[in-house]
Image (cartoon, helix red, strand yellow):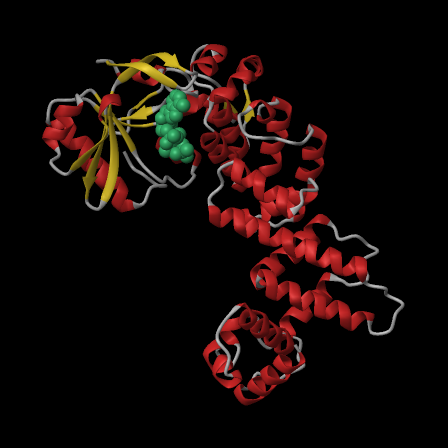
Length: 427
Ligand code: ATP
Ligand code: MG
């Protein structure tokens, strides 16, 4: 088997493992996603191996291994710096809660193993010599660009409801169609999504949104009616989501996941607070959540500034500039720039008195953007004022930061200490 899309080291390590299993008198094949991606010319991230060898036999052949999922027959073999999952041919039955098979039975025939897999394009395996076993027409479906269940779709989705989201995810990421029967089965079983853990659902939705065709994926999610049936709150109607998804086109493909979520939540009209609660309920990692929320907080700060601005009053432009700078300091430069990208993508309201390019130049002109860059430390300020540190210190340092960032004050240690004394007196 010649791998074109797998890292050469990984391909070699996987070849060594398969050869080792064969030498031990067992059958072994490369299987699943790695073949799908190789045949599609997409990067292969990991190579899974399926074998007739029982887990104990695998462990006996490869001393450096981890019994990752022993009960399900999966051993992770460590080979030449790579970890390869080696799984014994198996069938599954008696799915509990529409997710986990209660019985795993090891079998002797690789075709039986392929039959338990979700989609035809994921049910291909290939030997060391490059010979493929493809009982369900996976290669044909790769050419037709269609996602099709192995066997009866309705049954397969009932067994494991997560497969419905995997179906939408593969259709979205690969830009494939979904076979009619598969789609019909999905619609019939969609209520079963209620059985799937929120983090599993979130992980699939993340891959859809972060993939190359998020709009297509959101369109499919919408038509499937899956998300409102999940465990996590979904406070929107389909129409909201369709309109919001359309805005994603304005965001380049390179933009981060954080901005995709921010744009979506913005277009759905979520406040920063609501977004925070929603992302929490959806079990998003803290870093993603706080990143998205910071972007929406910049929006709120700026909206408030625009609302209170009276454009005809004198000095209105300067007041807005200061409010913008305060927002940049409050949420961080990255959140502020993220917000401007979102605003451009979402199609900024024509009536806004300040363009995003003006906001960008205001940001660029800020001499400093963080407390760390301020040429005076909290220690120096407390010493100069002969006061004990307390909440007043943070307030004062932030006043100094704003003054320097807005260009009122040079970022000079002596000048800052004098300004601190002045501000303290004025308190
Ligand atoms: P990717 O790793 O890009 O998500 P993949 O197809 O490798 O794609 P994995 O979750 O790594 O997905 O699973 C490996 C293989 O195991 C799949 O190709 C498929 O054959 C099988 N598989 C995974 N999840 C399921 C499932 N829920 N039901 C049936 N078969 C599955
Ligand atoms: Mg995989």
